[in-house]
Length: 296
Image (cartoon, rainbow, N blue to C red; front, top):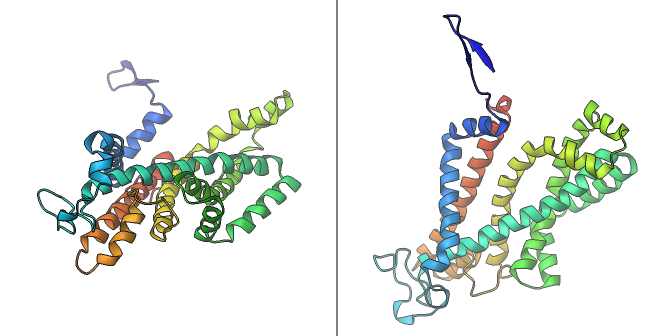
């Protein structure tokens, strides 16, 4: 893009891409930057935790001589009722929470995008059948649905992800449907349809790329919600099976010692709170960066 300065000389200014412009707005949001830095640290800790800690010895190995030790230089977060280092268990537990949160959301994204795009693009009977089914499913509390599915399939990390993916799918279906309905009547979509392109190619190539902004924001927000739901199920004993150090399971183990070793509940609770807060801050920053008009 060319611009003319006060002396009459013309200089060429390189136009920013959409990705560069989004990044420029994002890094100006301090909350989003803090959330992103914390999440990068958490992901790095989760990835390298097998190299830092010995799972059999440091994470699930018992040492009754060190049981219920308060936080100290040797054990930064203290130890639990079996003498296991709580710092190692919290850091290693990030792997379970992040894998469940991200896996459930992206599984729900796939299912919800397919249902929402079909409902929004085709309309009519297809739209009514899909959305009424989602409305019925959406009226049931997420935790209740997850409890039923986990009870039927059995307690495991994979089954927990599948159970939580159902609630994510309904949220994505609503968002994708609304976005598709605003785009499907555009001229470039009608011309593609007139050229004989199959429906799936029109949706994938021309419609869904223009629906990415609300989907990306919803991904960050739903990961936080899913982490809370997974922790709640593990707290109830129907989530990740013991002795895996999932954060909700750590909370459940600590409630019996909340008077004499309150750190066993406080530290895992803070890990959940800070992770969800970081995701929400990043989600708000992405919303403002992707659509600056929404920023007040």
